[in-house]
Length: 320
Image 1 (cartoon, rainbow, N blue to C red):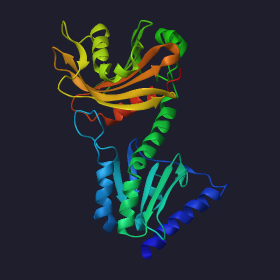
Image 2: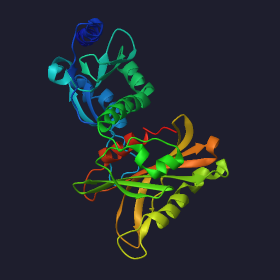
Image 3: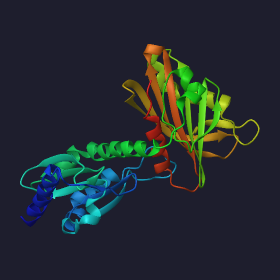
Image 4: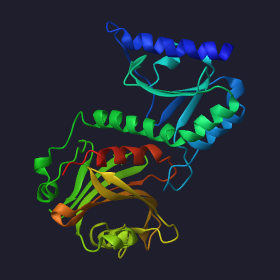
C-alpha cells in the first residue's frame, strides 16, 4: 500500500505541475541515450528489474562491440528528488491501484519525457513491461532524436552551396563542424573529425529497378559506391561491407516514404580499418530512384553508440 501511495503522489504532482500555467520549467538535464528509472530497490533487484534490464540492455545493432541502448541511473521512489526530476528521460515503474501506461511531457523540466508503467501486483507489472517493451526504447529514442536535431541545427551548412543536394532536390541539416570531402553533384561526402577518428555522412542516388530485389542488393550497391568514391589509405584499398558480418536490414519509413534501414560493419578492402555504418535506402517512386543516405564512423578503441546516434539524427532531417 505504501508503494501505491508513493507512486500516486508522483502522478498527482505530475498533473499539478502540468496544469499550473505560471510554472517556469527548468532546462532538463542528461546526456543523449541516458535514462533515469524510478523504481524501488526491491523491484529493481527482483523480476521487474530483470525484465527492464533485458530491454534496456539489448545491444545497439551494428556496433563492433556491444553497447546498451541506454546509460541507466536507477533511483528508488523515496529518493526521487529535484536532482532526478530534471532528467530529460524518466521511466517510473512500480505498483498502483490499476494497471497503467502513460506518457507525459515537460512535467518537471523541458524538454522532458515521463513514462509511467504500473501494475497492481508483480505478475501484472511484468505483463505491463512486456506489453510496452518496444515503447520503452522507441519513445525515448525518438525524443532524443528531436533534442539532438535541435542542438545540431544551431549552425548549419547552407544547402544551396551543396551541388549534390541541389541536383537531387533534397534538403538536409548538416552542422557546420562537418567538412566537405566530395561533392560531385552525384555523390556527397561530409566528414567531422573527432578525438579518436572521424564521422562521415554520404548522400547519393541509385536507379530504381525491381523493388523486390532492393533488400538483397544493398550491400553490393554500397560496395560499388565504396570502390568508386571512398578510397582507403593504401593503393587498391576501398571501403566495403564487412564480408564476415551480415548486416541487419529493417523495413522502415523515412520522409513518409518506404525505406530500408541497414546497420552493419564496414571495412577497408586490403587494409585493416573498420567500423559501424547506418544506411537508409529510400524508395522514391515519384522520381524513379533510390535515395541513399549513410553515416559511418571510424573511432578505434572508442564507444560508438552516440556517434552513430548523431549521424542518425542528421539523416532524419531529410526533406525531399
